[in-house]
Length: 156
Picture 1 (cartoon, helix red, strand yellow):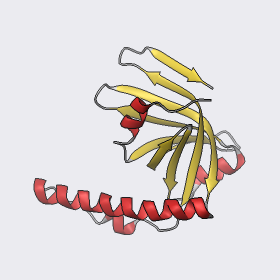
Picture 2 (picture 1 turned 45 degrees about the vertical axis):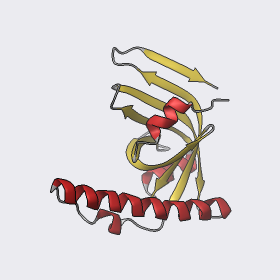
Picture 3 (picture 1 turned 90 degrees about the vertical axis):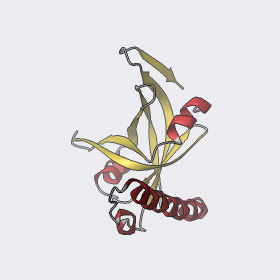
Picture 4 (picture 1 turned 180 degrees about the horizontal axis):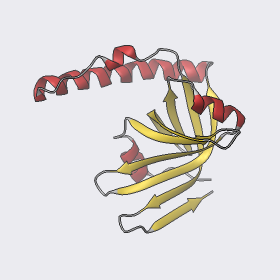
């Protein structure tokens, strides 16, 4: 069983978004950014507000790939695994409560950045749907791609 290391947790905690790749029953690839919510143990939790192609694909084929970059080291990471959709229940309710607090912080941070830098910020957070699904991904493989193209892989 793969446990996400503290080093990777530190990289992930600085992310607001990661990309998730899925494939349709007809073989059409789909890769989109999703809100990163949490990593814990062997699992990644993402928030999907759109509930479109990604959710449709995962309902028929739970295999997915999550990718992101560590901008400090310029190393890339890919986590492969299987997703489960969470759309209700105690776990969902707890995530919803925490997610609302994260959105408030995200909005506050964007407003402060706009005031201190003079950069305009839209009202994007106000347009985010309160309807969402949690993607709980059991990580089965971690792949690290180094700056020189070297590859390291850990599999459960």
